[in-house]
Image (cartoon, rainbow, N blue to C red):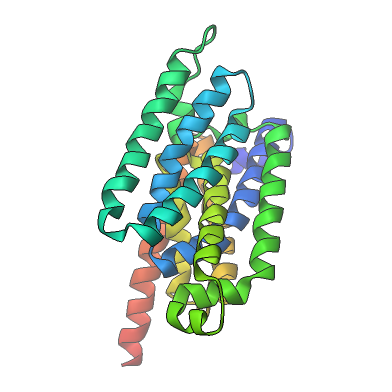
Length: 275
């Protein structure tokens, strides 16, 4: 790990990677808290895998794959939220259809793109060392949108998350805010694609927040702790992977899993001693 911090001073691509970790951690910590509390990890997974369709189409059209991911994520987030609200009985089948068809469409367009064939592994498992300055700008914009929206509608999101009936009695448009919430989750998925890829997004979206839930007494505190844990596992996982040349995305997720187990065991030991 010492080699990583020395190399960080000299190599621009490592500096971009760390900045990407920090930016992704903000969205991950905030929206991951809602995903864990609302228990919508499966819905977020559907969005994550559908995003490959937009990335593949954008790559085929010689456009920015990340921009294609943003557009597809927002459409998928709104559609999946609407499905969840309207067709609960068939929800699992419909989301599985989004999940599988989205990936199939993305793979089809990527493989039919003329010229240089992109490595599918970089989309599926991420390649944080290839983050560009343009990607960082887009990630900053996405973070800004997420943070500002959550600040503006924090109470509405909280009511919609914990007590939908009470929120309706107060005149809150539950369906509208739920769709907005899922769109923010979709933007967070795009942030995390740069770090761990499509396959491992759900782990990074849920594990830091689930760890934070063990020690935080409110959603706001959970968000703060989750952001800090996300920074720790992303930068820490990146540093661990650098020396032995391990896949950064997989190392980050394993680090997040270890932290989660540590928090589970630690909190249970503390409660046991208190009793």
